[in-house]
Image 1 (cartoon, rainbow, N blue to C red):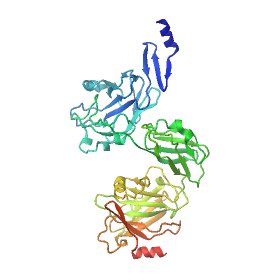
Image 2: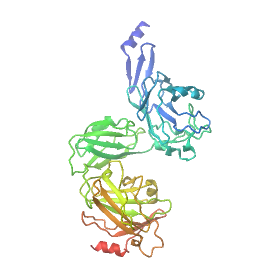
Image 3: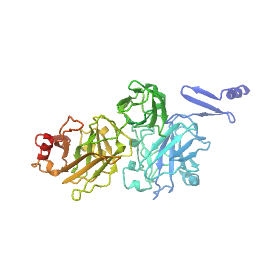
Length: 478
């Protein structure tokens, strides 16, 4: 026995492949370290009132999907700026653990093993980021839940939990959660009512790339990629590469990259991820490359209105499409939109497109709407990567309207005045037809301004290209 004890003291940590095993020298017990996804956040009760058949208090459930008993001592549960540390409790293979406020521990004890945390991170009804990290600060599980995931206005009103559907895909977030179907309102400490196979079969990849300055590049991915930092040697940037990467999102979706060389203004760069970089499920990115550049201020006709849908079908949203005619890279967050009252000539308040910094490179299109998914489903030839949700659009009356595109200094970049008479006069109805510039070759100070109409019927585009209104013909001849 003495020889065994001495061996344990001299070898406190053993590496078994990728598995780390440590020994408690005081008690002689083994404790296995966890990898990302070994312990999963499996259920969230963010809005417990009015209660169905569960205690009217918030809770989070975690599940051990690994084959090892894992000690959670000094682990951390985080939400917003609140951090809660675990006591030295174990969670066995296939075991659930209910996490709640220390004062509410006895309320949930009848449903399963319960750990009270003080403080317990506040959970908002609408949603927020929850992160579970180990004693070294490594991400083990995390989710940015949303009240939209309930899929039911009745259940989103309170008393029902959100449950993960397939615990084997813990970072497949939005498509892997739904409202509990348990008559109790949730399943704390037990198998989720929503449990079923729901594999993550795709990884979109890069969502956005924006240069903070000449030496820092922000990159956003569609899913958490805990192994991103160890793959930076394979990232290419127009032959230059990346020298360092820092985390900027607790869910490992966004990073700050340091380019090998300083970025130069007036140049468009393309960054590409290595093919070996995958999401947690092992899927390669479908969008591995992304173009960007150091942005400049937009001047007159650098960016122009290219397409308008102001009289959509019922239950469909308006949208506006812009095109960058300049040689500049433009920043969406520096653009403003306003409408002009056709009766008084008074402009409305100019509002920012978006708080998100995003590049519009030369020749690129950028479209905005208040319901992106409806536009994508209604217009099959749309390019989803160029279409973005905004919280508002300026007033776009069906009969006539006047729109202004401005920069941060309120300088006019472009404007458009439209009327329903710009549609072909023999059309039986105007709904669902859009106005679009017919010229496909643009010049910075002489853009094509003839408008063509397009309508979607039965999933197919039907374009009217041959007849133009006098206004369009006049503009086209200029």
